[in-house]
Length: 323
Image 1 (cartoon, rainbow, N blue to C red):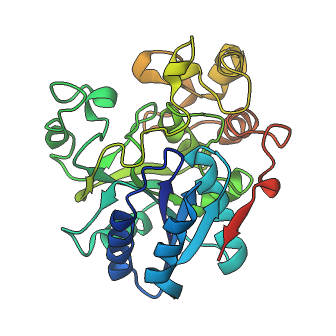
Image 2 (spheres, rainbow, N blue to C red):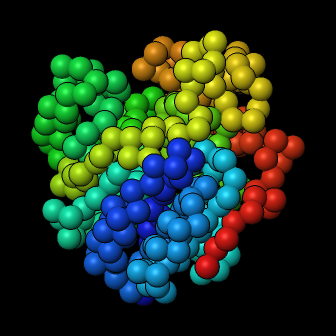
């Protein structure tokens, strides 16, 4: 039996500038690629009723719907949608996060290629490339500036890119393996972050479950930047402190400062926002191949510090209309 993939298309209505026709077109393109072992769900936050109705009317029972009527970051709504899908359909091999501005109209086999790569090795995360906002310059110092994607050619000249510890790519189109879900209390994305910096800890989640993080060379998604408003409702600029200290619900900036000041963070092998040199990881905690020496220690620290405790956010109390 083939491995199952949950395809989650993430949309946001917080700013009330929904492009419902684009959503529908993208969902149709995802359905064209999905096979019998794939399932498509739209995960929408605070959409107007007319937006929900139009999507349901046109897509019908070909997809599932997860609509959350609370102001929450996409990290949280994605986690909640995956939980509801697993509750309904059982475990999946992987959970594909797709942001609202992504489309594959130019490549009708993109998702199958991405999933094949994920299943071909010991990968905890498998990302596609994107033609905009990939993070090439930020994380690898390749390209002329943040908006220049020419540096990707250097990174992928030898094939797929295995992400080194402490590096990452921006989150736009990425499969999260079930091993992350089962090791981090049925969550996939650390939810302590309000807006920026989530991606900076991805390589450590992979290391904590003894798997790798890879970006496929031959899958390049078209990406409209800020489709629903980047970090809609949770922009960091309103705060008097740097964006890397911005947390959701847990006190800012105290929470992040406390985490990175804890000696156990460094001793467990964790790094944070290494592109800004905030907390470089302890290289002695990894083999020369990049394998974490004490995975349980790293896993425990991440679980305790990068995921919100129920006192701040109880997922069981999030109102989610899943159909």
